[in-house]
Image 1: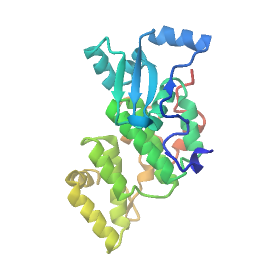
Image 2 (image 1 turned 120 degrees about the vertical axis):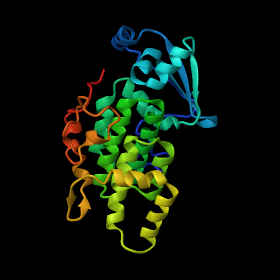
Image 3 (image 1 turned 90 degrees about the horizontal axis):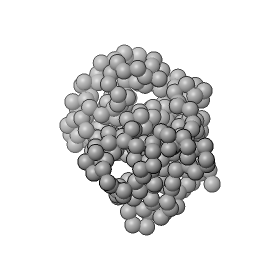
Image 4 (image 1 turned 135 degrees about the vertical axis):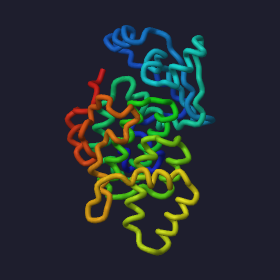
Length: 272
């Protein structure tokens, strides 16, 4: 069944069964490449809990190269061969797994060319992917999720729900790219709301999330067009996790123009 039409967990176009063990590619060519790049030291990641748990067998060096979380974990416990991530949905983590083992272009193209718009389903998928990448410190995947999330909101012509904004503030630390993005979008919601229940709900959100009020002010620097913040014209790189000024493959691209970049492979590392 196509991902967009599934009524089950919407977070992955890559099917995964509970209890399944996923291992790296096993063709001769792929094994040689993985051996040269990452050696043979493996770890089994127990992702999820209970009947929904799945096992991902992965190269330690690959995880260390891409994630500060795992780099610190393996440095502190070099003999570790199993590790549990009970609070992560396996259907979300499979995005990470596929990305790390070479399906970088296909994931981006699948989501962007499908316009991530099974709309709200696709947007929720990218939020979940962002949270996983953020907490496990996969910076490149965090940036990918941020790019696709902004692209999804723009093309579905919608703002983040109050629930999504609140989750972003509850699940990330001050200064995160997602908080900065949500603060910008919140400005739009305030400016386009009229007096009534919706405006009252926005004020209630500010009261519950004092950090949002601070970011609301800090993010008030920008270009006003007809009295509205044009968030779609902001460069994607503004919402990346890497330090400002670092070289970026999305340099000067906006959430409007990034479509073409993904479709042509402009922003992707080639598949293995």
